[in-house]
Image 1 (cartoon, rainbow, N blue to C red):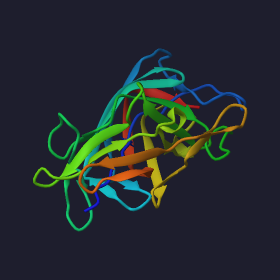
Image 2: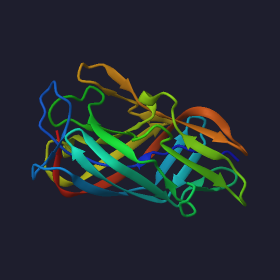
Image 3: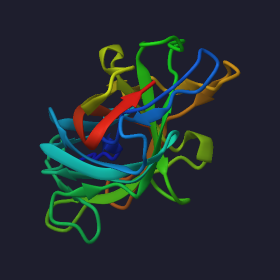
Image 4: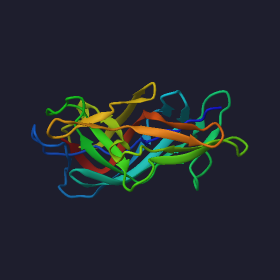
Length: 243
């Protein structure tokens, strides 16, 4: 059995925010609360099942997830934690995947930061944006074990290069440049490769972002690229705009 590991989130699942701003063509995208003050808290729920997939095909599928956090400034959301539930590895044997200290089948991310970014040359007004999620502290994006009868690998989602230890979700163009209380964020992948896997800095340079997963113990595997697939609806405590 090969169990997989790859989460993110958050969502990552999923997870966190959309929102704000006042931006010019040369500026970075921002969160802009309608009330003009921070913080703005938020929560999220998955709109479809989340899959965590490594490049070699190791997969974990979760039936639901939820998250919470707060937009603390124009360029930062913090305290973002995603909880994936009903998580099982797929393959010849289905093993339950659980983060230490959580309920059976629940995978939790570390506390994450999130910032709005430009992606795929989309730097103009009212074009799609990305939300880049990365751990607040040094360490894994998420860690869990996939076991059956107490036997199975421990999986850690973490790149050793800090600039790559993150995942990007996409906020559609239709939800950019508007004051709204709900925002959709989507995580996409192809064969374990995150799409998109990079964002643009203000000087138009590219910043590479992706996750890796490593399994130790029974049926473990070495570091390999991994990605998240899923969609979240974020609900904010007040209207907020992503520029």
